[in-house]
Image 1 (cartoon, rainbow, N blue to C red):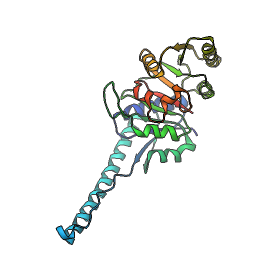
Image 2 (cartoon, one colour):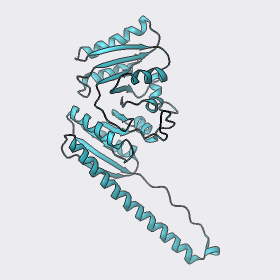
Image 3 (tube, one colour):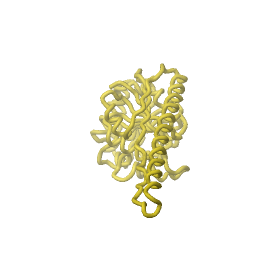
Image 4 (cartoon, helix red, strand yellow):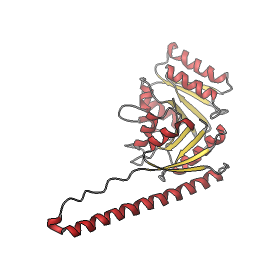
Length: 285
């Protein structure tokens, strides 16, 4: 369980995914491996019995042509995958890493990652939005499925550009899951030496300040420089507004739970915060 896997798909966030994975691999002193999954193409259209219209011979020719097109599409996809992995390898090497292992697999991304999970320390993938601009209407379904399925940390590149983080923001809610998340941050070298901001959404009361201060102290005793912030309002608006003021930051958050903050990450119908965030998101289990 020591490898960093970068999921390479050729979409707009691919370069950022490679850069984030290279950054993480260096900080974790872990090997980087590149993964491209060739998912099953859509089924070819069904050719019914049109023998009375176009003749049996014509139908057979059409089936042969469709089969040849399917074979050609498969070969082109494999060549594109090889080219993509080669370019990704060169980019990782330019970032100072040794030549990474590359893998091209057939099937579904989630199933492939579950097979690799025993050796996986961190999975890095891109959030490919279906709508551009400030109103991102949908998020690539792969992201939510991977977060739901994996029991390993997932780093999601939410934009096309990589910038080394100058700080990280922990979305905290004082739950047992959130406390475990802070323990993981404290024990890992991934974010070591970066300033931390622990943010919680709620009313400014002693009951809210106490667990916030306890979480901050947990990071301080392990050497982190920590600030805290108690935010009024609603998580879906307060957290993105805070992140927008933090410059080159990384958001750290838990994946599951019943609190309103964690439901934003993997809710029943949407991944709201991933959709709204312009900074990368590290999701811990």
